Amino acid sequence: MTQMPVLPAPQVPKPLRWRGGRVVGALLLREMSTTYGRTPGGYIWAILQPVAMIALLTVVFSFILRAPSLGTSFVLFYATGFLPLRTFQEVSNSVGAAVQFNLAMMAYPRVTFVDVLTARALLSVMTQIMVTAIVLTAVLIIEDARSILDFRPILITYAAVIFLAVGIGTLNSYLTFSFHLWRSLWSILTRPLFLISGVFFIYEDLPRTAQDILWFNPVLHLTGLMRTGVYSTYTPEYISVTYVAVCAGLPLVFGLLLLFSFCKDAIYK
Image 1 (cartoon, rainbow, N blue to C red):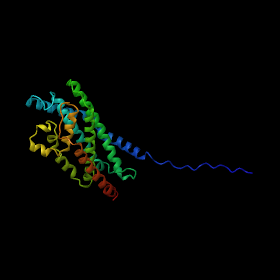
Image 2 (cartoon, rainbow, N blue to C red; image 1 turned 180 degrees about the vertical axis):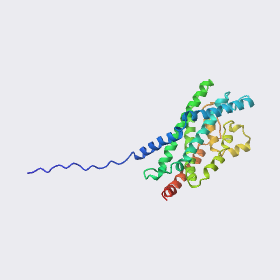
Image 3 (cartoon, rainbow, N blue to C red; image 1 turned 30 degrees about the horizontal axis):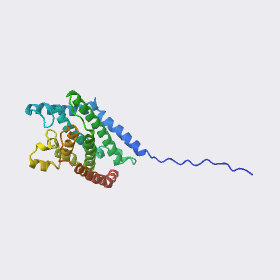
Image 4 (cartoon, one colour; image 1 turned 135 degrees about the horizontal axis):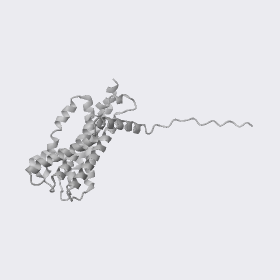
């Protein structure tokens, strides 16, 4: 009896499980080279810019005030207010320009707006976390500050800052793509953030009328929360992480829905 030959099993192509990860990785490398690779010492400038601003605030207000609203170090006080604000601005601006900047890349079927947003958000978040860690550590060492850091509110602050920045940036990404003047308009609208986000004051220093108005600024909640992790005696009652989450979640959902509905079709027209 002749034995039938055993045929090899057909080769089934493996699913491209990591295709999205590879696309994001490639876009991330491209973003690194275009954002920080075109100028000498690109990452050094990312650190020097907040350092210069904190130093300027320290010099100016040390001549006007005898002591900051919290503690005795002007540098530490302004660093704890400015670093969360800068993280929000940098991440939201980066994500907000993602689709417009990568229109040519999105013409490829494998590249989606989710890949583009993810790559830009990852690069900006990692950069700002690195900058914050370096600057805050340097301030604590140079000032010989004896603060006992509570990392829980600090980590919550940066999680909320990133969530808020990505949410608003996602909606801005659609608006920037659809309305070319929106980026300039958004830049004008957010310029007062530096003055109203608690960088050089605390919420309790404000008159009641100003408190009622500025409470609706979510960044003010985050600068206050950041300072609770640095100043153990500071226990503000106005902070609402839930409010910040709502301010982040709503634009994120609407931004994703709008991008999903309109962006890809517009690119292929």
